[in-house]
Amino acid sequence: MLIRTHDNGFNHPLGSEITPQAAYQNRRQWLLSAAALGGAASWAGREAWAQTGTTRPGKLAALPGRTSSVAGATTVEKPTSYSDASSYNNYYEFGTDKSDPVATAKTLKPRPWTVAVEGLVNKPGNFDLDALLKLSPMEERIYRLRCVEGWSMVIPWVGYSLAELIKQVQPQGGAKYVEFVTLADNKQMPGLNANVLDWPYVEGLRMDEAMHPLTLLAFGMYGEVLPNQNGAPLRLVVPWKYGFKSGKSLVKIRFTDKEPRTAWNVAAPQEYGFYSNVNPQVSHPRWSQATERRIGEEGGLFAKRRQTQMFNGYEPQVGQLYAGMDLRKLF
Ligand SMILES: Nc1nc2c(c(=O)[nH]1)N[C@H]1C(S)=C(S)[C@@H](COP(=O)(O)O)O[C@H]1N2
Ligand SMILES: [Mo]
Picture 1 (cartoon, rainbow, N blue to C red):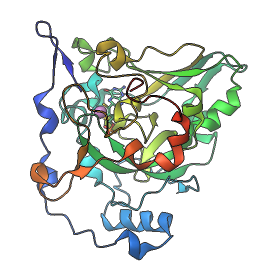
Picture 2 (picture 1 turned 90 degrees about the vertical axis):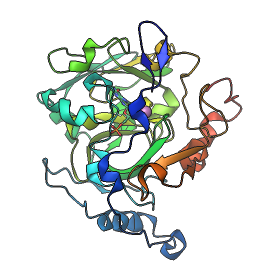
Picture 3 (picture 1 turned 120 degrees about the vertical axis):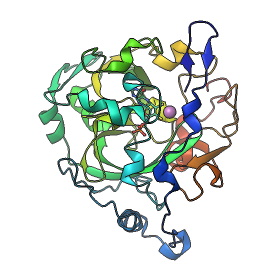
């Protein structure tokens, strides 16, 4: 991501390519090959997770989810360790260094919590967190998350398809987009003092993207409720888009007929478009997006970079949503 500075426009933060110490620790070699696993993808994903030794960290309240049956929701890739996934974060409301949120997000109060649902829906209203937790059965989804800065992780999330909530509130015919507004509270978030973005952090999806079963309303990860730094008590995870589309600590979901003005698009429209689909063929104006570095892989900073996949590897599931669109113009 970019930092707005007063004099020279936008700068890439130096911290973005620094790998946390944990990433240098020796990791067990990943021995299971996709070929050996045959078709048992979801079982393999669970097995993969178990092999990281982070089945349930035991730090926060348990939030188990049943194995998802949504196509593409359970990758066979080795999940990132919980310690890496919860200590290398982007959450600018708590500072712009990757290591800031784990240290400063302790002040976030994830309870009590309400999410306002507004706009072009027949049943708007305020949803209490406890009501949202009960709205649909919890599922475990093992998704890749790819940051625009060039790193990626594989995280076992817990939640349910955003579509479950959307169906309940009954969008009207005119609703073409969904806007996601996240918490902006000076008392809880020290990073709001910095002139980095126009707070609150806002994201948006087209209606069909929001309704896609892979779009996850996540309440937990690694079998537990979300740690604050990962977006407690609830966040979006849109696995085929760059990580910044996955807004953390949501407080408002608004249905609209106009494309929402998203925080990064407002800050740097030439660099961050509305769609922000993971696309290795289209370079960011200042760097290639063709490869990525998986956090926690042996070698740390010098780990071999991997080829980034179109739509982050979810092309079979979501490619159809963009048929006929010029993805160079609509980046
Ligand atoms: N409210 C809010 N949501 C946010 C961000 C943020 O700064 N503020 N950063 C985004 C970015 S750039 C990424 S890559 C992901 C990181 O999620 P993680 O820390 O759980 O890996 O969160 C996204 N959601
Ligand atoms: Mo990101």
